[in-house]
Image 1 (cartoon, each protein chain N blue to C red):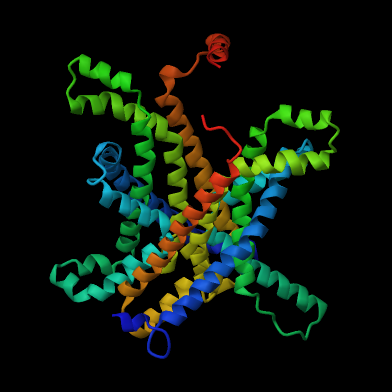
Image 2 (cartoon, rainbow over the protein chains, first blue to last red; image 1 turned 90 degrees about the vertical axis):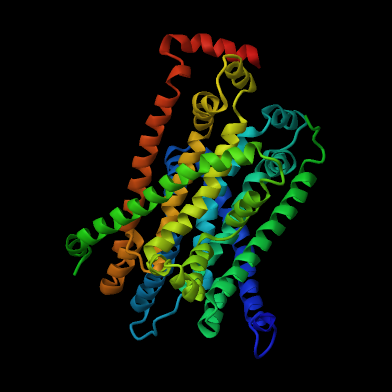
Length: 235
Length: 244
């Protein structure tokens, strides 16, 4: 039993660990991109410009209504087709380009993360105490300084629980990229299953690894929340 | 073939896929809705030791990707083929639809239980005591006081969960079930016309939109007795201002 998961020639330990590394890389690469999307969409939805507002709300409604896996296929197939059309248009003899599944995964997951996090961030902005912003203005802070010193630290505090949930969801959603041929944990498990004919054992181990990653994230997030709320009186 | 011809040729397949998506979602949600009230009561009231297995199950479901859960059931059952054959269960697990349904039921039951637990724990204690004072037995109290309130509290979150389940049902296409996404991938592999993905997106959005409308109407009906009627809104605003 343990031989199966040993490292080296006979075991699948190292292959699965490679898969875990890809899964982790994918999730960690998606986080900043997704947060960036989230801020842009949140700002669009909160702006006074009507078309911009409509785009912001439209985007969140659209992305939250679509299955993540459909988004992934649309990005992977669609962007791939688009790129190749552009390349063909540019240079007829060019070789068709393979769109990297990793990049497709980051873009698709970040688009989903962006839509959900925009809602969380919008809520956090709404929860800001207007009086503090006025106080900042009264002591002569510029809007820029107000954003960095007053708004952002508190948005962080308000948005952290919501963003933490989204992070765990996204971590789990990375398993979808195995369908478009990226060698993440899920796909390496599939490869191991094809060789060993022990699907239950290996998928159970994959599940346990995901579970471990989720639990670890929860612990770290709880620490971060505690840290973010250190200056706040508990009611 | 241009995009319009493709959709004219293939729309019956997409419709077929839509029915499959609806069937999978509806059945999973329904079966989970029958189980989850019992589990939520356990989660809300039982002793920590008694609910430990339940918590473990819910934590596992919430901490692992639904795709991994699906593979665990669909492919994983193959490892126990002989035993399952002996028990006469192999026929069940051989069918991808059953496996997908079982996975989705297990998944959404865990989420619905946690949502409903929040509702059960949100019920005003005084009302339960009032029920006791009136001589209602435990079953009556659950049926007439606890659950009507718990469902009202949990209603919006349950709606969200059903939408998530509908979206997750698209994963069934990975185990060869022809739901909306399954049909879409099939048509795409024949035509290489990208527009079919956009039709799929429109279908999913329509299902979500229609569901949201129905769910909202049901919520209004559930909360009819506490909805402010038009001329009372002003008075109600005063009241809530006082409360603050």
